[in-house]
Length: 318
Length: 162
Image 1 (tube, rainbow over the protein chains, first blue to last red):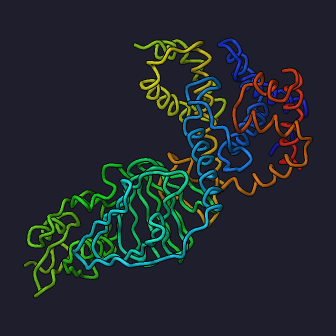
Image 2 (cartoon, each protein chain N blue to C red):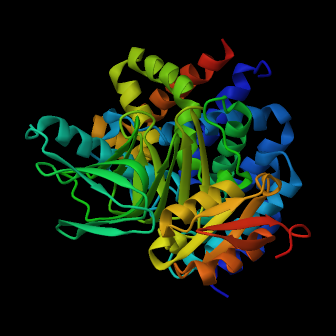
Image 3 (spheres, chains in turn orange, brown):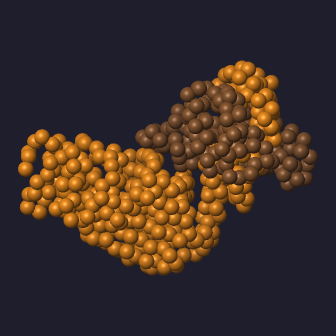
């Protein structure tokens, strides 16, 4: 950073402190000050950035008073105050859990074959729709703790601040904040997409808040996390036979379809680098679905016994 | 046209200057004013005390959010990366991660401050309470709060120039 004169820093701080009370002429004077010297804008930016970071901070020290509604005095921090509120509420919820003494776990496993689905009602308006090819571990003595070992599940969770609903998968963890969300586990790959409400990813560590329409992908082996967005209506779309892909490699698309519907799909190496973006509606009936899938990824198809073979357009015509 | 939109049109030139000064780019400024215009669709219904001041505050907050996500894009470390170009739309999700190291230093500095100074800073910066309310909470005058905040901000600012 440019070395700032004390005077400029003091002025920048004074502008920051006045901001909530400024009228139109105050704002005009502020703009003129910002424009007068690039160091003014730099000093002010520095202060505003550190404030922004502070507002995002999930600190226990600030729990107990939720921010005012966004449109109240002080100006709306549209994303930010919502976040602080959630974090404070969650910190409170986490604290509550630490005090409770959970009963000894009484685990049971629900497993679905490819193409099979199961619905598990956990009471109090909470249920899990488990997709094909999945393995989910539940606990009879604590129905609000679930482990997704592989596959996919759509969660409808009735929020209860005193007993947060937690989904674990490998070393990753998601905690609901009143929510409909979908979780996929495929080897090291993990993703969570939020349809309604929000969830906390890694609530005891980074505590990343994901709201409706957010989709987080993580890979445990590569320690990578990507956050993107998804149309909330498409979250858990598999439940209605609707799958959405964004730049998804073809092999991953096919393995997802095989898991969900039990349709054995193989592909030529020529297709494996191709990526798919789009929404596809499937019936679960391979005869109807495979041509549809082939057209989405720009491939030809043929039947080979139990398997369906996809190949790049222009070769291997059926 | 709703009241806020009318004020937007009337103040557009000044808002544009504010955004340009804050973001350092006319294109980004245009972009964010567009966002602001869209947001007004949902805000226009509510009666507002001083619509000009209100509009400038929203604009300044949008600029601060944008700067935060720009800063993140630069400082993002290898562990947490965002491949999606529109990940900026989720500042909540990432900001925490990036800012953690810096926040720790800020927290240390605040812990070392006199109690009232750090309490005032926390109420103002994190909880966004008006200075008058902070004065009541701490049992001191508004100008006392202002002094505490000025000195506190100064110490935080100096953390980064060391």
